[in-house]
Amino acid sequence: MIAYLSGAMEHVADEGAHWREDLTRWLKKELNHDVIDPVLTSQSLVEKHQAHEYREWKTSDPQQFVQFVRKAIDLDLDNVINNSDYIICLWNSDVMKGGGTHGEVTMAYHTGKPVYLINKVDEKDLSGWIMSCSTNIFTEFSALKSFLKETYSNS
Figure 1 (cartoon, rainbow, N blue to C red):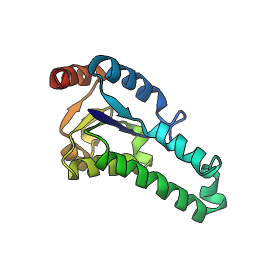
Figure 2: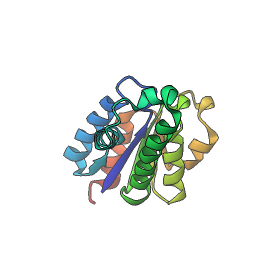
Figure 3: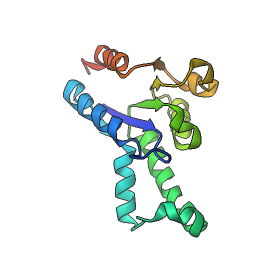
Figure 4: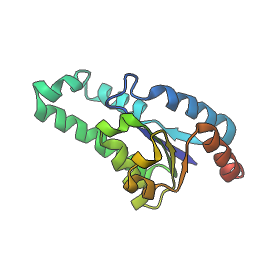
């Protein structure tokens, strides 16, 4: 089984690496599941295209910025649609400034992939769209982990 770890990256200091690293270790140890971490795939894409300054291109060279970010979008959506079995999404206030997490959750729903959402915003502020794309919603990682163990420990 392969989990795709969706969540804010663009407007987060560590691109959301910390929670993904912790969950990756847990998924591998407890369930022997592989993980697609978009922080790592994005870093590989930056290296491959020598795009270390791509964030600066947003204002200095918007056309180059868009061309590069489209490569990242294509990679992420391909991973959601074709290379993962389920999505784990951290939904918090940081996702509100971006669009990737919204798209990943929507595409997972559209293709029939389970979406396990860890909701960290007030329930009244949770998008009805995202709520409806989610297979299960949790408020804590511990509850998600218990669910995953029960659901996938025999797979």
